[in-house]
Length: 434
Image 1: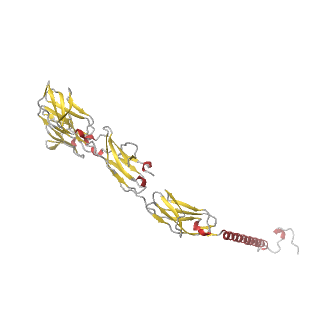
Image 2: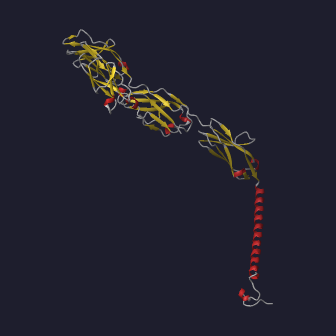
Image 3: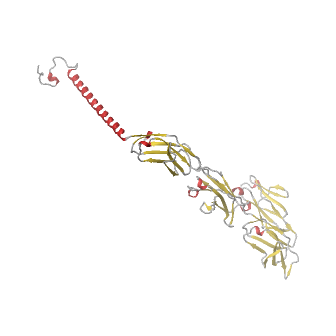
């Protein structure tokens, strides 16, 4: 039985549960840097507050109990922490005294829409040029925000902007900002409970990857592949595949794929080799029909070969001691097979045995002795038996007659019969003649 026709069970597992145990700081507005004097609201997110008294903020180089959300305007590192969960990753608030700045998101992940904002302090901008790695790549008119959909690693680099004030270019460009597009999730790793299972046992495959805390709500789907062939029906939410029974034919190279549904980002694992081991044959036994191996000339003899254990197709073959070639063989996915000798001759008497082979092991049974009686002797034996039975029947019949006769005499002449008792009392009307 091949794996894809076996019962496959997709185990529902929340692959992002671990990520939710780490809280996240979300800044608003979501830009960095900001002008000095502007404020940012920080929200500690990723859980439902049950006890606000257990919330801590890291600011000004120490942990402090503050409300949520928290409004700040000082540069520095900010984190939040809820007792029982891991602290958040840091958010660095950067302040600028420049008159022209390029603002980018605090973090950018694959599949995000990348927003770049060329921002002037107390100045109205238009005709904005954006540069990446010293080369201009985009022009924006009135709107100072540049939108780049479906960001990927190619969008990482050094960015800055320049703009016009009225009809002339502003003399200064913004400072360069290093932008790094992060992986939404790393390529998955396929893990298996065993890479060398025995036939008929269960195997569990797990397609493991991890979303960042900032994107813990991203929906991932998974697919499992064997030797280039998908073994599950399309994409599934479960990252675990349970195979109740695996067979030798299911050996091969396995890998899995993970897909972020909304972002349409797909990644696959490295292949894992799974070699299914066949179970060796054991407990071979030969049986004859008729039982005891006694058969009459012209009658059939059935040789039954069975094994107690062994997997895969098993080749059974039957042999007679002293003959090099086999009498016959059968290959089946079975633990028992029969071989029939349709008409036995006297010359067929001897010792028989069988062998079983599943390509992993070959074993032979003990010898079974077979005797063949001639048909004439068998007939004489049957006649003698019949005569004996008839004589025995006659003897038994005569014995019964004698017993009945004796019983009758006892009845008529037994001790209960008194002298002088009229014969009629015994059923006669007169005495018998003298």
